[in-house]
Image (tube, rainbow, N blue to C red; front, side, top):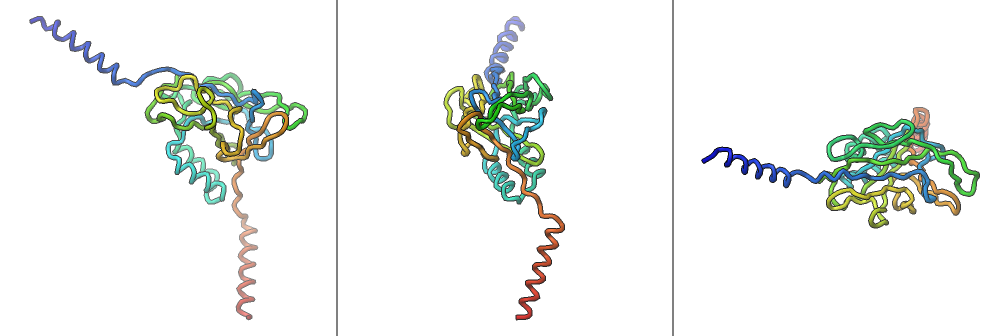
Length: 251
């Protein structure tokens, strides 16, 4: 029997098996809109000032929601400081735009952009609460060549979050349907648009404050870290404790 006649069909079967096993490479594009379009909110600091251009935006999903909630609670209470909160959030997050297999690469034009990250990349002239339009640092763009991955999961909430000057903001959008929802589909990420205009309530701002104005664009203010007590404050607390103790002894 001709050996080639045996091997060729076997090779064809192996190739078909590899195609069956390999994950679908859909090369989808996830669109990002955080520039106030449609009257949508924009990110600002807790003091209502601009977040610097080039500041990174994290786009993707948190892997452990219990750990996420614990991190948020600890940051709000001051139990965990800014640096350790960032470490916990980073370790619990799968980015869509980090230029690694299955997660795609960032595509923006403007300030501070790169092929592996998405950032605040441009400015927009926006009116806030009826005031004269002013310039705000915002973001837009996309994450391209994003392939579905089981580590991202099906029907999981997607998030955008950022950190700047010891402040953190985390948002999601769970109200929309179809192309406006920030939820991973069951097979790929085609047509997902992460538009801040879909956020319209405080319930969708997990860390930070949603400010709803009657006119103009709304704001998402980052949550500041609770400052640790200074040495002087600790000394005053200690002194007050000693005074109280002495009074108790005199009674």
